[in-house]
Image 1 (cartoon, rainbow, N blue to C red):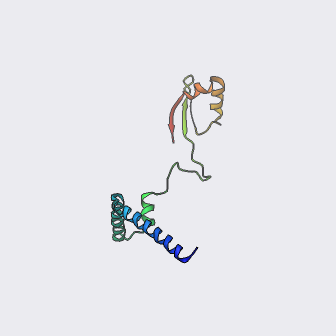
Image 2: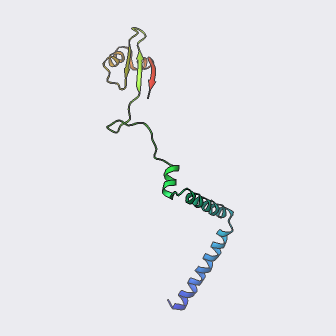
Length: 120
């Protein structure tokens, strides 16, 4: 490819890019975004904040369920009351001895209907 051909190709590309840039500059959405950016930059300067600090402020780390020392979230506390005996048990898991006995005797669905309170 000759130097003249390269020059002509680059000139065409430059003209195409200039036209594209002119279209973008006349777009009202770009004007609004540039105005927003300028105002935001001025506000950051006024309060002496960096972009990283603003992002941290606007989207802090999500804090979902509190985790225990092992990193797992705590299970829900369920309070069951046996309507037949009036006995009340509180458990965070299914390994409770009395709860297992009740489920064996009355069925899991029936025992789950005995939940009187659930806490996080």
